[in-house]
Image (tube, rainbow, N blue to C red; front, top):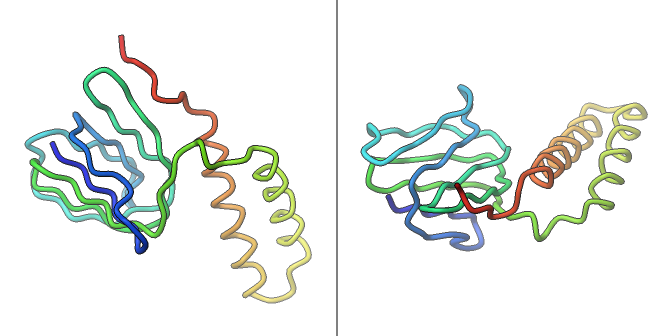
Length: 136
């Protein structure tokens, strides 16, 4: 099955895969070859991609997934791997976002702090995943 992950800036990934597990608006879904036609809203979160003998994890922003069982297209606001995340900076961002939430006076400030907190939590979840591990 062919996977394409597309952000507004570039095609992040284009590879043959065995399956992909995604955070959809209705819960976590896994797409396998010959999957029924699907178009679904995606939440930001961690994506698990399985290849023949390995698996990989990416963080994604919100977006959409489309498949016909032969290809899977992810159209997302952002997508990146563990190698671009700085754990110390992410932990600091979580703390700052929590402080911002407590001190927020306007709805706009609360929304901004919530957004930073959500992204940082997704980044921490991604860091806890194994990096491109061979499957036994």
